Length: 460
Image 1 (tube, rainbow, N blue to C red):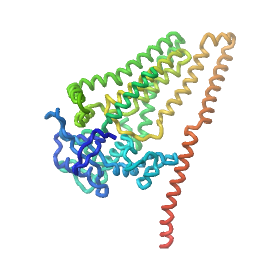
Image 2 (image 1 turned 90 degrees about the horizontal axis):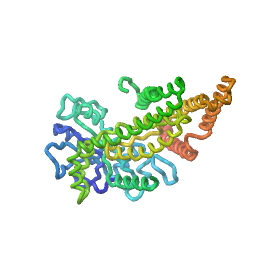
Image 3 (image 1 turned 30 degrees about the vertical axis):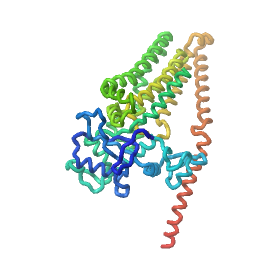
Image 4 (image 1 turned 180 degrees about the vertical axis):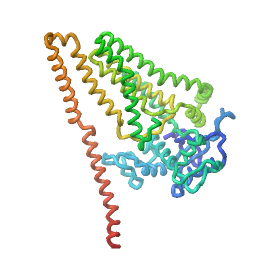
């Protein structure tokens, strides 16, 4: 949590700013007052029960600055109740993972005192976002000051205002002290180690279909020419040269387009603000107002889709033709080392901080990588069978060569599937913890259902 940056609530208490809400500068006062009241209202009254205050302009503020920028936070008690509402899992004293409950808070590991520091900043921001998204319209017919902006009971207020252009953006703030610590650790490690037209019911279904289409397109776009050179032209020298050219060029371009170009554009847009920041930080820490302005102008991180796609293509370059160009693995390892730091740099300096999104696994990408590994086995066995060294062992019978290659390929695939079956996807100790959690949930449900059943039986 941010200890150095704090703002004063209306009652005089201070709170750490976690999330920023920006409205358009022409927003009507009655709409602003209504939204802020809904954010501050008690939960039993349909509010979010959060702390929100207008961002105070810094000393370098200008008339062009948007006055309708507000920072949102919450008390530690409210965040702990929110952790229970969202079903946040934390480590229990016995080592198991359990859904956090406020009544049982002292039995969770690392919970001390009033719980300050128990939740990470990402978890706190996720709770704030969850509560803002759950602000629902009650009996209001429209947003105050906007008669044409109809409200419907039970619908999200935040999403309605975003769709109508009143609410510009909602984004979480970076924790500058934590970024400094991470930057130091990165430097130390380097020094020491050297689909819109489809109507899907679920977001996961939409993402799966999108990934499938993009993967098929990129697979043919990136590897079709290499397959043609390998199996039609059968020119291994040209295949090796083409693979090296594509691999090195794509890595260099990706690094430039993903990190350095966006950072240069960001620095160019915020040149004046950056100078003010340097002047301000000569003697003291960057003010909250300046930090909010800098992060508000950053680009929005659109998700991990492009990062997974890049890894998938690199995995294809390495695995599909590894017997022809073994050096590809070394180049990709070097790329991955630099990618770790460039991605961290990109997330901290180029993009707004994204809200954390819980995920059970990597979804359809797991299936994509497994399919690529199967294709790679077939491709490499075929390339090995086409090499002159292997053909020399079968000078008279090409059929025997094909049988040996197919047999070896089947052996490798069988070994892969056996290992996949033998090695579980979920470690044994995690399975035990999940089973224990399921058992405890069933026992708790039985205790709740039993009194209800007795009352119903008594009435009958």
